[in-house]
Length: 77
Image (cartoon, rainbow, N blue to C red; front, side, top):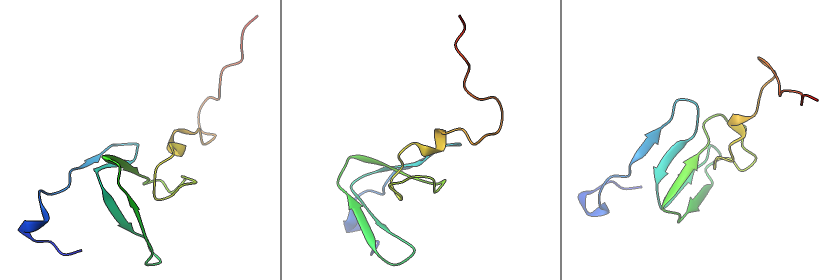
């Protein structure tokens, strides 16, 4: 992708400590194998944990418990 002043303002990327990268869209993402995917949404969430079934788009799989720490609570009678 060329980068020149006529391309418009720079894209804003928001980094979240334990979550996806939020990118103001529309965006085009080049994957490791050279293929590209695109989205015309006003904001997209890019997966950084690689757990997403929709990679490179985030599907909130990073929120799933990994077996570390306490599990879900059992209901009380």
